[in-house]
Length: 209
Image 1 (cartoon, rainbow, N blue to C red):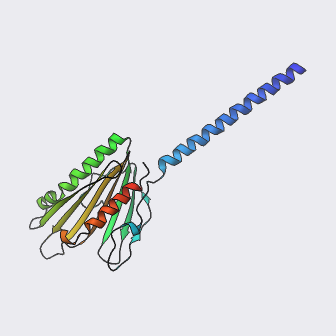
Image 2 (image 1 turned 90 degrees about the vertical axis):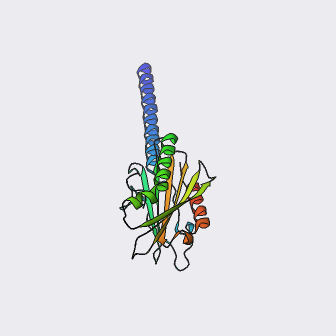
Image 3 (image 1 turned 60 degrees about the vertical axis):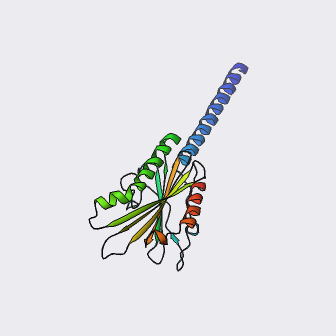
């Protein structure tokens, strides 16, 4: 009887240990999965360049790409691993932020480079498909934040229509890339470059790589 009792106790102990280990593994797996689907950190409306006549309104942080791709970046942002947030004002000024969790820092660096080249070529690409239009662009330089960020401006105009100006901030923290696009009517002289550089720096600082 004593041997049977000892065997039963040992079996029960082994079973309990196995159950505890399995439960711990499930918790770890769930935690890892939850971390994998968590959105990167995003800007708030107050982080954008101040509008002289309106507050900024921020939409929800949403998984996937926005319904309309940011100007200049059509077809280059991947849907996989992407999140976005759209911002607006009571006037003609708007913005969007898209962040992408890449498979690795190397993949993120490649994506950031692709986005920068696309924006740098945007004015020339737009002119080729817009007869009668005018366009210009400006490289506003890099920012020393995490793995780096770069700010650009693009101006476009067509006859008998209001001109448009856009600012782009592209940055990376580890395996996560973010791009912020701001736009309104006007030209490059109307762009709040200094404030937008602060916005871009905040956008990269807020990422969760």
